[in-house]
Image (cartoon, rainbow, N blue to C red):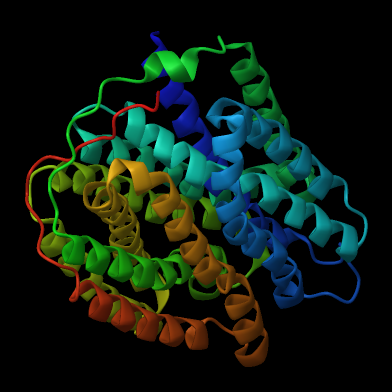
Length: 398
């Protein structure tokens, strides 16, 4: 395995671990009744607010730290810190220590997107859209595996194991990463192509629109993935006894997002990004409305279609940024983009927890998200027209 391939393997593994770790709680909580006396589903889910908030807020300083200490060191900190934090979550004995451990996990999980995505763009080669799409599949794999694997682990060993076992896996991958040659990142760099001449006004407009979309899409992405296990429990099983079955269905639903990200990644190298994004954005609101009105098994295909559009949007958004921001500004642009995106994502946990506690089901949450989908479509309509030329990548830093 050459240096470039090794680098991409670790980047993709980190993406999987990031999204898996963020979504352990929504499934594990279904088996946490009595874990913390006096706290019900909504209250325990809300304990994850700090994790998601820090996950987003940490992206800006992470960009600066990566410039100072290097991407390799930051990725090593990601693997070791995330693994240790997840183990700490499983060992927590009070709501305060549990929330603190989740918050600490958010600190280390914040490293991946600013560092990993910029590194992927640097080493991906000429098919940037395809590389982003495949990387998105690995992120989606984490989203898909979280309810399935957590449900099985929790069902067999209890909720604490749901955090401790993936933490141990993360630490093992970190140990393997530390054993790879220190020159992996440098050796993986290739000579970059010339960035196309995009009018300044077009680039500014594109960045502003992408920043606005990052907020709404971040909220939609996180909220849907958080509420999915509970929504399926309410619509299909009505009992936490079916936890493993709910996990399997949630896996099947969310795996649709992986297929979409791969397909959209390929299309991003061939067609108008603006047209592609408009189609995905325009479909979100009607799908979420349908999800709110559905009952029984109709929930499953509608949830799959909704998740497919949301995940496909993430891939297009990353490709848009890579194509419209000059290489010299790209690292900072990704940091800002993920910062505002995960500020929106941070609102998902309290939104789901508070509205569910207030109304007793997911209906109010879904109607709120339908309005978010409408906003996303409005922002997408403002995105400027771009060339359909293949994606380009930055020249390596000297």
